[in-house]
Amino acid sequence: MNLGIRLAGVGSQGMVSSSVVLAQALGVLKDYEVVQTQEYYAAITGGSALGDVMVSDEKIVMPWVFEPDILVAMAQDAVVQHAAAMRPGTRVVVDDLMVGDVSAFGPGVSVHRAPMVRLADEAGSRRCANIVALGVFARFTGLLTLEEIAQAVAERAPGKPEVNQRALRLGWDATLTQVA
Image (cartoon, rainbow, N blue to C red):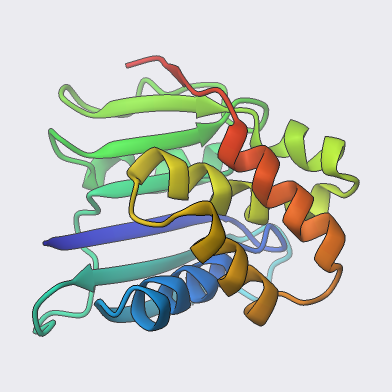
């Protein structure tokens, strides 16, 4: 197995932090080979931000994710910026509130909507939408159990543990709607 995973959004959505949590869950808890990289434009609040995770059951030779197998997009700007890198077979989850137009994805790209920001509001803080996204990701891909991703969140994102765990559970239980 070799998977390139991209968690993308805009600054302050926590997608870089989520990629670190995801890398820990896959590398430490699941014992996969993992490389996590990140890119963000810190000079601009709301600028592009992404965290990539390369995961494999073999030694990783190329640590960069050029054509992700899985994309979680939390903002319309992330879709605009990354849609061209998606190839047939790529699986995408977009937030149903922050992403309106998914027409930029080419044929053969499987696109699903999930209410990640709405569920974060339900959990008690929109700031935990990235944690909701981790729950959605874990269930959507089957790469992690709820318990595994919950452990990684507890260890790497300890800020408000009760809110984070609720957000994670809401993401895990979320209903996704396939749109393409």
